[in-house]
Length: 171
Image 1: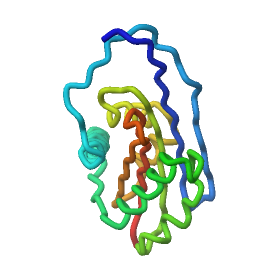
Image 2 (image 1 turned 120 degrees about the vertical axis):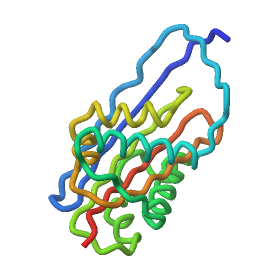
Image 3 (image 1 turned 90 degrees about the vertical axis):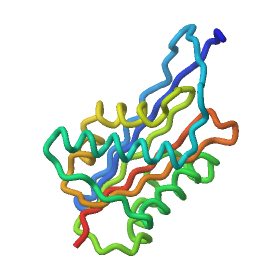
Image 4 (image 1 turned 90 degrees about the horizontal axis):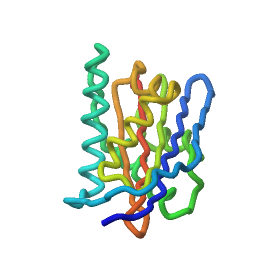
């Protein structure tokens, strides 16, 4: 199927220890005519697992220890992704401190990456590539953290995905 599709990806990064927040939101780009075909439908939990595996593979390539996935961090990440996907909060880091607090995990530092993309056959790979191409996001991925939580939500039409990844260095 030939179709003109506008692809978009937006990224955001935040850290909670130095009270620094960075948001990177590139404009939409026109890719021209492309053949777009999904051969399988991925669930959001499969996309989350893919992000987790890609992030830990990247960390291993840099000599960093693997992050351990934490279910309370996953829940907070999923809630934020769903809220962004349904438009109840804007894309970004609004409520980041509350999300970290609501995990119930005593921490030394915390960080967050957010992303969204539309129209890609592998949305997890697109989000991770975008994060790795951004210094602020890459710093969170390479950071001195030991726990992570990942949440992915789809828009109501199922074509766009919102991503939240929390990072915590526990006490």
